[in-house]
Image (cartoon, rainbow, N blue to C red; front, side, top):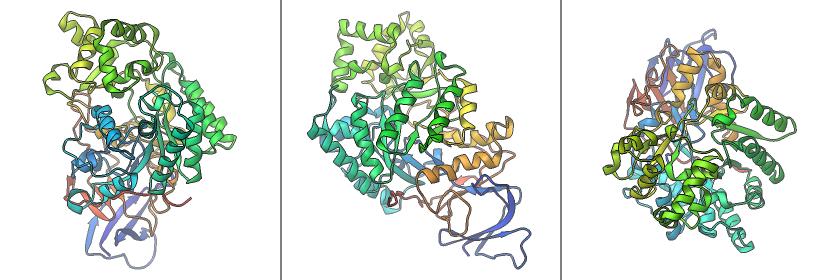
Length: 538
């Protein structure tokens, strides 16, 4: 054997009771599990680790990640590896970097600079989904990436390639092209399709168009992962829309960062869960992910009404620079409630700037728009408008509109999984990027008792593995891949805070990917054992 963990508390990912055992690894897989009460000799290995006091679980699966370029940029990738994450699902919210042509690549790079940076340090040699997955496999001089990654075909990028940025229905020929692009992406290894239905240009797609694309996804055994049309005033209707769309298409549904935000939804998690329970009882295949925090995070430009983004970033900037059009935008944001702000009039004291693309604008980072406006002696919209123009739409925000009771209720649901939605850009990113999974274990398991330890581990491991249709991950079983986490249940905690969001967690001494230590004694090794995880056959 390569490695044996002795006297470890096994939390196997099934939700069943913890037991003590010796766990042996060999060739990147779990080769043997000898329970404490079993007769016979204990397994030996080239390396024996006394894990007394530690729990061993499957590696955590981040069902909603924005590491599309970070995996290529940063070989250490400690933000995720140190949390115990061994697999990330990227290509989220309908916007990522494959499939593309030269025009679309330039446009999408600009559109999501706030999520991933501009990419000037990245060799964008790929154009197809398969080529992007190959780039992950051969990153960093051919050594691979820090953790594994699965990919969703981004519907907004597909629409960008076939239709452009116009707010109109796709022609039959354009719809056929989109269906081909989605099919090709799934054939090349994508696990499903994502949408960002409050982001342009994906939000311009009507349900009939999305249903046709989801039928393609279903035919390949993938799943649909929408960031739906509203988390605010129309949240429940938006969830219902996605459930009905997926039912019509016969497609499994995974609801991205599924929560109920803004004042209109305080205490309404039960309404969402009742909707999902009824749909599941009727035969729908539904799962969801959340992060264990109340604020959201996105880009400042995302708050604008959809018509202001029609035509792409240059058209948006031109509208912001025009006094009359800018006033119309302000009225939609502040008085009417724009669709970009989920149908709720913006409250500028809830919008905290978390990052800027231009370092010269860094004085606004860590302040709400209202605070920066007060310092300048001007109206908040004037501050926001100036920042949008000067930072060329690249600013990111924390959106303080969540409710703790909703967060706790939804994480208890049987269809729930964990997702960080972690944006790694910006001077003060959301602490969820560095802390989601230890925060579940430290705060919501140990301190609050919202979930039992065994139940929480199942949410973070076997449930997402089942959604991804991975037959040999998500459980501690003989023959399964040795993607594993060893943590101390008594001390595990997120180190990241809103003040210091890039602080690494505590209480996670060892993380293994394919049987190799990527975190050892609390420190990042030089191992790059991660690879692209491609869709299994339908």
